[in-house]
Figure 1: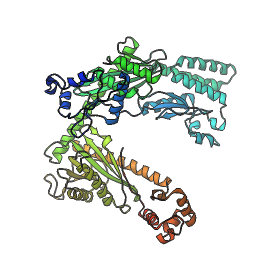
Figure 2: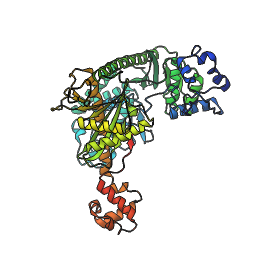
Figure 3: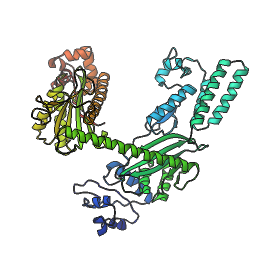
Figure 4: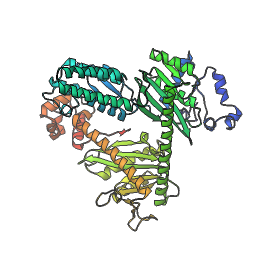
Length: 603
C-alpha cells in the first residue's frame, strides 16, 4: 500500500488477495468503527496498491519479510534492534582461541550462543578464562611470543604460545570448556574429579589443588543456575507484554539446557496488535535469515503457525519446533521471559516520565511557547587541528534517537578553526533539513559560548530557518558539571543583561542539557579518533582522483617519500611520468589543505 508520494506504508500477504484487500475498504474500517485506529489511519493515507503474485505461501512469507526489512513501512510491526547477536567463537587453530565474535558465522571453528548482549558474552568469556585458561589472543600475537604475556601471569592462560602446556593438555582443557558450554557440567566435574584423584595419588599436590578449586567454581555455577532444563535443550523463549501503548518482547535464550540471559525488544507500530501477530512478525523478520534453535517457545499461538514452521524447517534444513502450549520447565521459562518484558516496560515508562519532566523544565527555563519535542546538539572535535569532525545528536521525548545521529568530516577550513568547522556542519545539516530530510528541532544546543552561538544564529538566518531556539552551552571556569552557563543571546526575556542564564545545579533542565551535550561530545570524539586512525594508516595521495597505485609509488620514489612530494611544486610534480598538470594541482591541493573531502556519516 502506497501513499501519494509513492512511499510504502504497509506490506501484507494473503492466499485470497481480493478478499484481503477488499477488507480494508469496508465502510466501518475506513471510519474506524470496525477496525483498529491504526488501520483507519493507514487507509486515510493510501492512494495506491501494488500486488505481486508468487507460487507458494512460503514464497509470500519470505517476500513479505524481505520487503518489510528493506523498506521498513510505517504501519508494519518492525523490529527496531535487528543487528546480529554476539557469540563465543572457538577457532580451528591447533591451540584454539576462545573469543568474542559478531558477524556471519563463516569462520572455521565452533560457535556458542547467541548471547543476549555483549555484556553476557564478556562475562561468560571472563569466567571461562579463569576456569579453563584458554587463550583469547589473536593468531598473529600467538605466533610471535617469546615469553608468556600478562594473561598467563594473572592465571588466565596456560601460555601454549611458549610451550608451557602441550597440545594434549590444552586439548583436554578445550574439551572441558566445550562440554561446559554445551551444558554438560556433570561430565566436566566427573572428569576433573578423576584427574584430581590421579594427581593426588601421584603426589602432584599443586595440580590437585588447582583442579579442586576448578571443581568448586563449577559447583558454585551449578548452584546459581536457577533456570535449567536439566538437559541439553537449545531453545528461544519469547513472550509479549503491552501496557499504555508500549509493546515489549522478552526473549530468553536457553543453550544446552542453561539460560544465557534475556534480551528485550520494542517493536514499533505494534500497539493494539494481538500477541500472536507481534510474535509472528518477530519470528518472520528475525529467523528467516538467521539460524533458529531447535525449539522456539512462544507466549501465544501464531495466526499462521503451520506456514511459519514449515518455512523455518525448509530454510534451516532440519526440524524446528514452534510451541505455544507448554507446561513444566518451559512454562517457567515463558513466565520468566514475560516478567522481563513487563520489567522493561516499567523501565521505559519511568524513563519516559523522567525525560518528559526534563523537557517541560527546559521549555520553562527557555520560556518556549510549548514543550520542546526534539533537540539537536552539535560539537566539534579534533586533535590540534587534525581530523576535524563535527557531531550532531538528536534527542526526542523517547530519549536519544541514535538512528538520526550524524557526523560531518570537516574539510576546507584552517586547522583548529572551530567556528569555521561548526559553520560548515550547521550549513550542511540544515540545508538538508530544509529539503525535508528530517524535522527541524525545537531547540538547537551548541557546545560552546557566545561565539559558537552567534555562528549558529548566522547560519540559520542565512538559510531562513525559523522557530528554532539556539542555545550555547558554555562550561564554567573550572569546567565542573553544574556550573554551565546557557547562552541565549541579547534580548532574551529570561537571560541576564549579557544574554546568559545559569540554572541551579539540581535543575532537571540543566541535567537534560548536560546529558545531550555529553552525548554529542562522545559521538564527536569517537568519529574524530576513527578518522585520525584512518589518516595515519592511509596515504593522503590515495585521496587524489586519477592517481593510481603505480603513479603514487613513482612519486614517492622520485621525491624520497611523502614529505618530499609535499615540498614539491606543481612544476616539479608534472615531471613524473603520467602526472598531468591537472593531477599535479590536485596533489598539491590535497597535501597542503591537510584534509580531504568529507562526507556525512551515519551512526
